[in-house]
Amino acid sequence: MTLNAYNGRLTSLSHGGGCGCKIAPGVLSDILRASPLKMIPSALLAGSENNEDAAVYQINDHQAIVATTDFFMPIVDDPYDFGRIAATNAISDIYAMGAQPLFALALLGMPINVLPLEVIQKIIAGGESVCHAAGIPIAGGHSIDTVEPIYGLVAIGIVDPANLKRNSGAEEGDTIILSKPLGVGILSAALKKERLSAKGYESMIAFTTQLNQPGIALSKMPEVHALTDVTGFGLAGHLLEMSRGANLRAHLNWRDIPVIPEAIEFVKEDIYTGASTRNWQAYGGEVSFSSDVQPWQQHLLTDPQTSGGLLIACAPEAKDQVLDLLHRSGFHEARAIGHFGSGQGLAMT
Image (cartoon, rainbow, N blue to C red; front, side, top):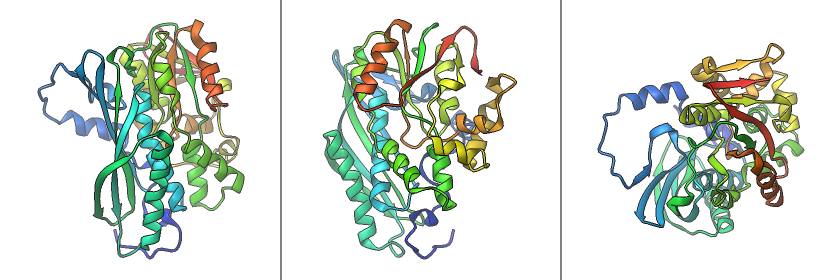
């Protein structure tokens, strides 16, 4: 890739943005399948199996270290907002395990001869502002000179193993709850086409910089059986991870799924990301739709969510308690969107 001149738009320097940069799930599975089996210590409570959000290593009866990393190329043009989104997205994996973040390390790759230093400084400042809001320091990191701008974090947290929430713990009959609306990937595609309104951009930033802190409180609720966050593989992809892990079938009610209104308008005009198509190619065979589901709805289900919401499986009697917690924490769009039943895969009506 040749170095483009910086024209004030960060997104012009990258071939993809946000969690849409992720390697397609089918390709990733093929890559990992070829990896040799390694010794797995008993203290490693969560690793690469079932695509957990973070690795968890137990150090004593009541403490386990949670470690994750996430980084990507710009999803927006404002450098400060890019830093905020990338940092929020990385820390989300700690919350998705029900853990408390402790500190972070910065990962920085920048085309030094292309980007002005003040732009890079704003990216870093955006990330630092989110870490400050999460109550953690950036304790170090690593930087390299790259062709495309890349920013993210290694995030370290801690959890009581008794409160650890995996993505595979759902039980038959559980209610499925989503804490943020879908559509961030579609809005990013509209932004690249210079179609996104100021209101749409405001919504995009608000959702992608909202820390999933309720994950800590949810981890302490025994009625919450499974937890993950929705990122690059879309709602359908991450829900299928939960279904496979629990050997259950997820049932979604389309009318209950929260969606950013402007994203619906754009996707009906065939504005969506290439990652959405790659996601469907990877796992579409596990999804069944009722006859009246439209193609644009499929693109929303597979839309890559950068810094997306928490996806929660809880006992039906705890639904109102979970929703109340989320609403009081500022997740006003949180909804119950379906349930888990016997079988396999994902069905939507």
